[in-house]
Length: 113
Image (cartoon, rainbow, N blue to C red; front, side):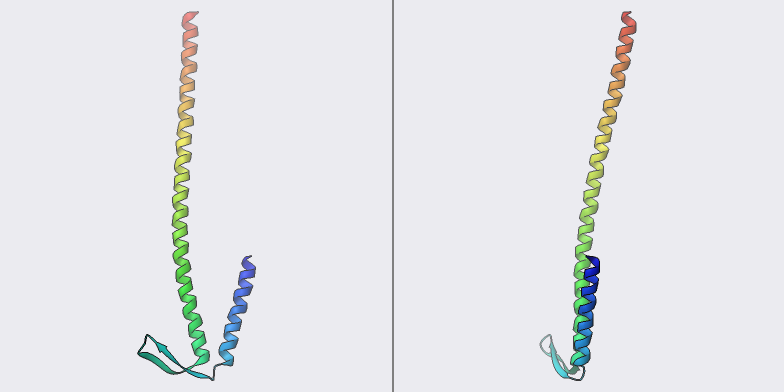
């Protein structure tokens, strides 16, 4: 599945580069934040800039999601480890009590005989 995503991502990147090269001579006006505008920007450069900005923004969003999920995973791992430790302590206590019972039974048999 990872190879499929790599191939598709590479094809999309090549397609964006192709569109940028084909339209490199075309000029356009870009209006940013209302009053601010860029006049005479080459379309190819605009496509490359837009692709770069979308890559950066998606990387930031996915990084946020990744860190959120890794924190949840660490928290879940800690809770599982705590449960495992509690279970081990319980079995250890049971073993200690069983050995004490065996010792007391042996002592009782020795005392009665």
